[in-house]
Length: 341
Image 1 (tube, helix red, strand yellow):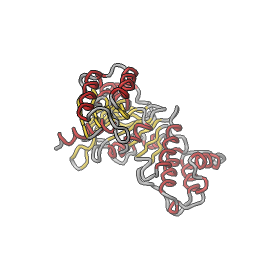
Image 2 (cartoon, one colour):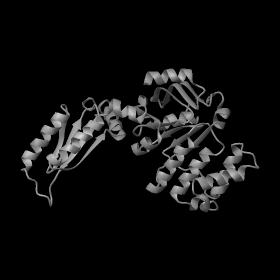
Image 3 (tube, rainbow, N blue to C red):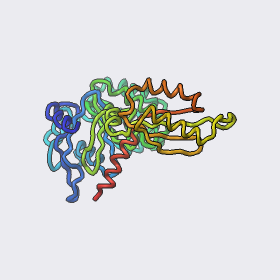
Image 4 (cartoon, rainbow, N blue to C red):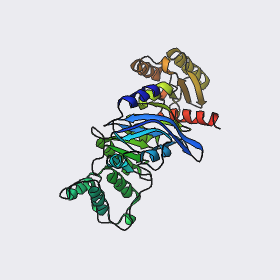
């Protein structure tokens, strides 16, 4: 998929955002190495990696805060080096740390950004009201930003990035510091905002956020993009398959078979259903098995067999889940540790 992405940057460098063959050196150390990716309209691309992996530096070259020593970056078809003014007109940026004036109001922030972005003066009030209502911060519109909650300031930062209709929006940890309810609301707003004419690049430490928002993700390790694809594709390609967790009946209902025999019967059943499954944990009445991807040919058949076995094997409850994006991320993080300098 990395080769495919490189070919895509050659073909579509007039997309929302395109980075091709980018290297960045900071104090003689390579922070980003040979990075190529393209983001199209309607796509939210997630850039994942541990601290020091190169995510922040990648953001910095897109906002011209760092210069790439090799390669090129285009925003809406405009080179960020030779046509920076035109590129910036196409870009919105939601930084990790809110960049706001303390002494002006929420409404005044948006009015200022709308004017800078070229919204006609006759439309500014309408556009600002639309964002205030859409992000549910209208009641705070007259407050100075220094008197707003962290969640309101994050919503304001997102609105400032979106106003004026940029073709690409860069979001650095957009839901940092928000409570769960506000975070879910912002996620829903982001999903609704990138359906057709705009693309986005998002960096996050939250795999839940990446899974919820991103149509594709890339994982960076030591300045290099190591994998790229949809979250489902990466789970299938790099995941360990499935986890089967089973809890045997106990408590008020006395089991009819001794515990050791029930464990043996359960292991025999799992071995028959998934020949290559391995027992990962066994404690009291709880057993956890790792099931490789190739052992599952039909999820419907798996659940059918598990349901039949519930009464026969005294199973109180079970769960059968696929590898999470978090587990895929940790696999690459472990690679970073093992192969660290």
